[in-house]
Length: 314
Image 1 (cartoon, rainbow, N blue to C red):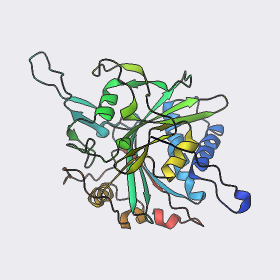
Image 2 (cartoon, rainbow, N blue to C red):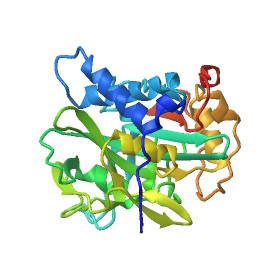
Image 3 (cartoon, helix red, strand yellow):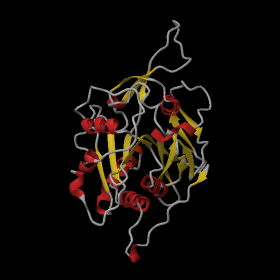
Image 4 (cartoon, rainbow, N blue to C red):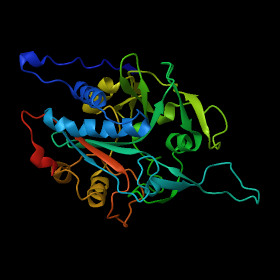
């Protein structure tokens, strides 16, 4: 176990730029301070997070958000991002196993670096803890947690390449994660938690919301398959810095990147053209590429630029 030392803010007065985490947190707070919505809720916070990523383009980073156009029309009820799986040890009344269908994620976060030939992804489920007490416990849907934590065999999915053993065969467990919004003393923020480290703490098939604890380390890196994987962190600043350092998400292979690009034709140009070094580690690749956006996707290039390079995000 390795302690993660948070990257300090860079001194822009000395000609250096702020880190990605500082930029992300600043964008988020500024947007909320000027928010004209009637009340702060989960949807408002999630949409603010997406715009906070988009504004990185004016801060020497590059990011592109591809918004879902699923028919349901709401951020948190995207039918096309639902998966069907068969959990273990849950027979029905007739003795057969019933399939369970639930949402995989609110956000697919793709961080990449053409300079390092690396791309990582995490499927993030977002929650809003209104009565947050800084104890790393929050309410969540237990069926969703079972999917993200246990990573069962996926029988049906409208999300490209997320079928079969895709989740379970990921190189790093941060392939699935939670982003929990909360209100601190003076402002709103978001904590990051790896899904596999949340204690299911009871019947895993109960569908209603339950408050469950995160049992991982805050600001701790775990060495897995010769890579460092962040267990959890408090605040968007630490989360953004961890993204910049490639401590969040599981690597994708060249073939998986090609499927992503076909599934999302509006993916950034430099992501489409980059080579990745990760080897294939999944047995399933979908031939049925969707032509519509079926999940909110954020592409973030962590290679810092000396000027705005928004042409590459087209």
